Amino acid sequence: MSDPNRIPIISAHPPEKVQKPVKPHHTPRYYVHRVKESLATRVSKIVCAIFLTLLLILGIITFILWLSLRPHRPRVFIHDFSVPGLSQANGFENAELGFNITLRNSNQHISIDYDALDGSVFYKDQKIGSKSLFPGVHQDPKTTTTVTDVLSGATLTVTSQRWMEFLGDRAAGSVTFRMELTSAIRFKVSTWESKRHRMHASCTVAVGPNGNILLASKDKRCPVYFT
Image 1: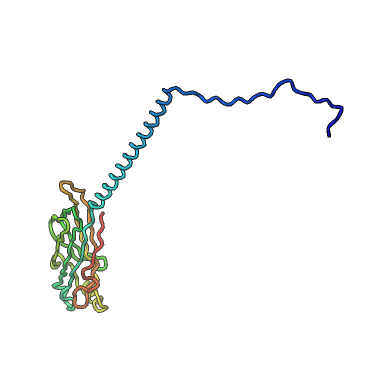
Image 2: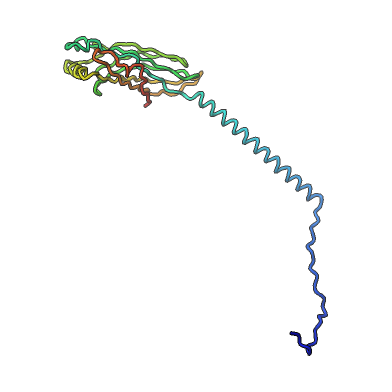
């Protein structure tokens, strides 16, 4: 409620005006500098994009070359294994083991050089025979080397006791052996050669009562590893 005895007071000072900020005025040199900076930024972005694209392409090419030139281990298969005379009680007197194996180089552009290839036969983890199968061989890409040989005489040690163990397994249906191949191999591409790798192939094979390889062991691929 207003007071009728109160005299209104009028200010002698008018209200202050709010000044608007003054926009800075830039010289032409400033705008030229800004344009140069913008161009430099765009050029650097383009250069970085080109570099990253080239790096990506180079990486893809390198990966493809690595896939095509990566060495694959030889593939070893056992096709035949036999113990003639297994049905004979005195067969140990002229015992022999015959076998046929293949070594496959599945690489498309890489050849393999083998040093001497040695073959050994084990029965219940006891070595019963061994022999050098070849002194060395060069294997071209996509080729197969066949090794057919026989262990007998001085290369095969089968006593009468061991032969009786053979006959005991034979009566149970099969006799199981393990054939091991060892060699030092090198991979070769043109004039480049890798270091030597000690290769081992282990082939478990079973023969039936007639001394011939069982169907389950025939054409079986043998595990291959390096040491």
